Length: 175
Image (cartoon, rainbow, N blue to C red):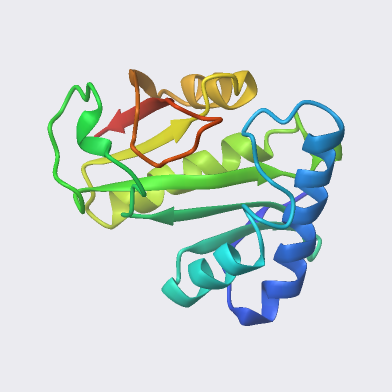
């Protein structure tokens, strides 16, 4: 099974929308670790916005989306609040958002493959780090990032205005 990473265009909008819908439906019916909302986030509008900015990616096996994520420089909150081991300004690091794998393919290395791709892209493009945030109860994501070498940089209020997610756990991987 060869995994291919592609930067998405509007040609993949329907497939990505169906992909995230399947993921969020599964989360709502089991344990919604990231507290995503089906049809809202990640949803069609956030996918369209990421495609327009050239920051939406998809992991494909045999022509089918098996994973997806956004990779950009936009924290979408107060990343200055983090207990970062290296002080960087916005734009010196890339941020992973909405990383997901098809539920039936969890534990097959797809998430790790996507994370390593993000790290390699950041290095190739001259960034100094990759950072991200995780909902505190999202144990699977925390384990994935820690396994890939990310270190904890504090649990902080990123001032995003979510009543049900008052704090986020921050992670970093510096180069």
